[in-house]
Amino acid sequence: MTRLVIPDYPLLFTPILKEKVWGGTKLNEVLGKESSASNVGESWELSGVTGNVSVVSNGELKGALLSQLIEQHGAYLLGERVLKQYEGAFPLLFKFIDAAQDLSVQVHPDDSFAKKQHDCFGKTEMWYVMQADPKAQLIVDFNRPLTKEQYLNALENKQLASVLQHDEVFQGDSYFIAPGTIHAICGGVMLAEIQQTSDITYRVYDWDRPEADGSFRELHNDLAIQTLNFKAPKDQKITYSKDANNVNTLYESAFFSTQFIPLAGTLNRDMSQIDSFVVYMCVHGQATITVNDNRQTLQKGQTCLIAAHHQHILLEAKDAQLLEVYVP
Image 1: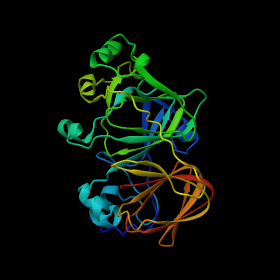
Image 2 (image 1 turned 90 degrees about the vertical axis):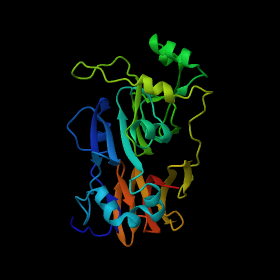
Image 3 (image 1 turned 60 degrees about the horizontal axis):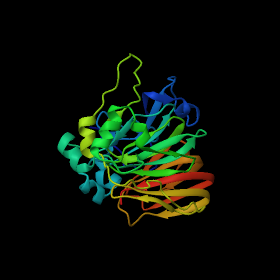
Image 4 (image 1 turned 135 degrees about the vertical axis):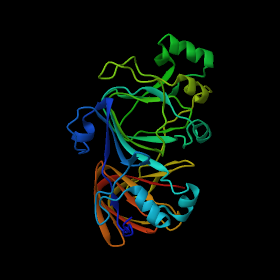
């Protein structure tokens, strides 16, 4: 394998676009993801998922796979701690999602169950709403405690929607989705998603909606029933500060720490204490990110990766909003 130069600049990656029966056109029209398809539901911005490994799109490393960078520059890129903890795997997956129609009602397993069933990570995730049509909603959790029998009865009688919590949402709303939480993104919502590296989803209800060929997507109720949390619902909506030119903690989990940065000026970030790569998702406006005298402009809808080696990051913008993510 050709020896790759060290990743000493902000890395951009080619989006991996996923057509979905529920997808729309906002990822193309609003975020500039080039596609002629009318049903692009997901843009995988940064992925180490097998079969969907991201490719660098800028600079000297253009064309290199994320996996190749980790293989050759693991500690420099991920950080010694993260490299050891995840045994060389890239631990997070970053997406933009456009739901023109309701996604399936689903649930994700935790690490323990996913390891046992699929030999992979579970899926803990969070959402940041970038745009929502009037009256658009998210489904997050049940609206009351249920027994398994009550849940199965609602499912069998096509009354599942009546026991789900529907929240009307607006730009800037954010939710944490713990494993075991039943959920769905509903039509009219475009959001950024940050999650563990996993493609495991248990679909429990898909609105009796056929695919383009008339078939129906597989449901996974036998697995879902083993992972669903039927206890008293929690308020999964995140409350957070939005102070300008400041690093506002959005959410801290065991797998990712996410900050919200409204930027109108210059901000110097000292990352010397975290020993982790840093990812920026631009959710509004345009910002410039500089490391080691290497500058990269980040437009709304773009995502970049900063190697853990870089302890000082300069952020500049006239009017931008960034999500900053690293492994705590």
